[in-house]
Image (cartoon, rainbow, N blue to C red):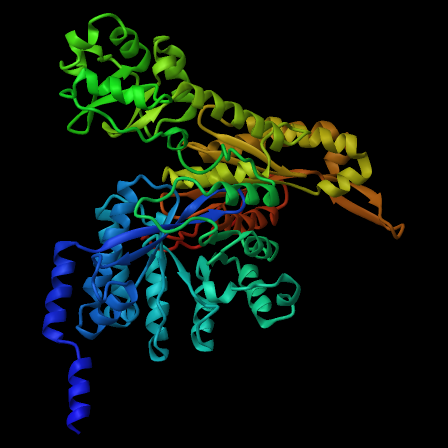
Length: 612
């Protein structure tokens, strides 16, 4: 009896001490965050990161799971969830990471806080300046009797603009049924579930059936725990588009900007994507940014000279004071001056500002490629050698070089040529998807219009493919004509399907202009009799007379407001339905989506398609 009591006393934690320690950690913001990269197999680039939160180094109970368990026992799970989300999102933003952030919630927090937790998370994320659409909430396991609360919470998350991920592969049947109904944006495939995965045998298992079902429902699978190229190859062949693990990149306090060379080479070879990934999400300067430690105005000339001496590849050094760039010291100017007789003795101990260009080329991280090209072309020739300073709202971030810019532009031009449709020369599927993802990531409102020809197949059968090609080219010319080349985008998905991305409040008027112009010009392909009848009569394969309407254009328009969609996959689901509604009306017609998906306003009733 006495022995049992002693053992229990040894094992029982000091709840008061634990509560004080955990409370201090949360109050002082002592939690640490690290980030594991998630690769996008489609474009060989970073899709985002999975955040891991833990306590200070050396703590006996420092892991996320242990802290979550302790906070739940002490009634602090809500506070712990707030603190974990805050530190993960804040570090994510501090490091200017691109893509999305998967943030885990501790087990028990949904049961403790209910659906109102979605509002609390939105307030915290919004207060940090992060769009909720960039945060993917990784749902914890749910108690069986709390599944209804989980469904309410999932709906509340989506209403606040968040995406969410579930672990439906490893949960109980009832919870799996909940997630199948709630339709999470992502499903996490955990490490133990893909360990030793064998493509030859997995296709005949229940695992493969569930995987196929999840993909068929539109969920994106994120495979966590990819250890080598064999794991990647098997998962990629199963249709999985995103993955994490040691092969993709280890966890680090600073989000990695690139995958290891071995992973990048393997993915590029298997998925046939560009090795330079020039169309990857994020601004052009995010890809050109080179981290370079600056100096201060008080730094001596000798110290700067030694920096150049020990770093042969260093072309220029920024002079920064209180986070703001003051100037730029060119390697050429510094070395040329200091190499002269007695210059070290005369100027070595003096401030480096003597050799500083006080009017450097400074560009903001969010500048577009056309703007950047215009700035560089119009700049003084000296900047072609020294490069430019990259800032974020005036604060120093790093350096960029003109050589890297030229390389990036060249790669983009080559990729555009590679994916251009040979008939219309318009961008194809890959650049279309990349452009939509980039536009959504920029959180700028736009209209994404999916365009399709009606009754085009019988036209091809009757008039021949040469005439059909002419109609396709007519469609491309009409759509390009209503697009502003500097701000809009038009792409050719293939066949008779096109996409326009229109900016500005006049997008609906421009869609109607395209319909009117197409309606007028398509008549030139038909006889007067056919035009009067509204169609033409041909024999089908059975020798029976069959009436076909004149070829017309249908446009399904989806207005994408900030936070409404996370990626092009979500847009395409809505667009398919909207385009179908437009095609249901005879003649040239426009249907505008009326449903709101992630904003706060209640959904409005659907409108009928609007014929021209």
